[in-house]
Image (cartoon, rainbow, N blue to C red; front, side, top):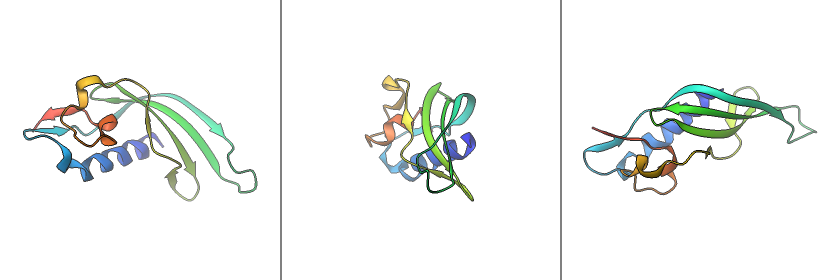
Length: 107
């Protein structure tokens, strides 16, 4: 489930790569560790499992939280939230929405 969410983050950033500054790019994130997983019930009439997961990524030690619906396949319920501060880690990303997902490295 965490790998699915990290892949979704990387896809968002990759598709927004034209928003970075020259000679810099956003690093591909990988899951470092799962901090918590909890099951929630959003829709009592429909049998679907929803999970709120919190996890850390590298590089940058970003902490994220996401709600994932587990049906026939995983699906994000909303956007992924950044829980930790990122300061200047995302200075190469000009897109305000994508800044929370970007860890800048040299090309």
